Amino acid sequence: MNNKIIDGMRKEGKPFRNIMLLGYIFAILMPLSIYLMNNDKYSDKDIILFAIAGVMFGTIGLYGWLYSIKYRLEFDNEKVYLKTLFRKIELNICDIKKYTCNRYRKSVFYQFNLFINDRKVLINTRYKDEFEKVLKEYKIEQIIK
Image (cartoon, rainbow, N blue to C red; front, side, top):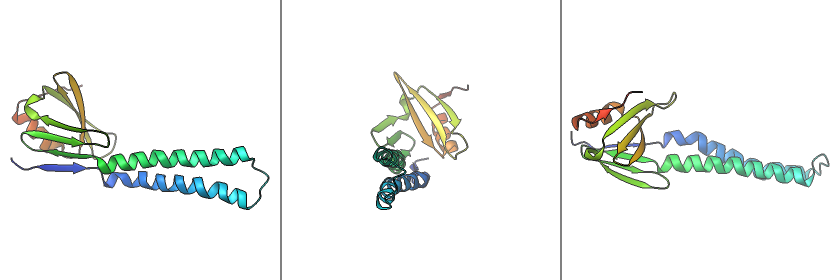
């Protein structure tokens, strides 16, 4: 098997994009509407807190959306390339000593913890069978919890 398998999370980023848009729209429109209607029910402190809450939700959504867009996993018979928002990792499959595999909640993704000499690398992929086949070719031991 010399096929290169490429996996990402683009489709899973849509809810985060929607949270981001709603958060930033809320941060702008809520204080603006309170201010324009001259509603004395809310103080200036309340208006600022509404804006801060909207910006916080928008920023959390922005982080999740960017992370899901930038996540990219490529693997073949010899190497695993992982690119995330903050780092790039290149692994030789022969360096892996053992691994664990668990399904991530109710999603289509499986989480592989790859144990290399002195560190542990977490990989998320929907291609469980293909990745396990590559690991079994190198006779890498699976740890079952």
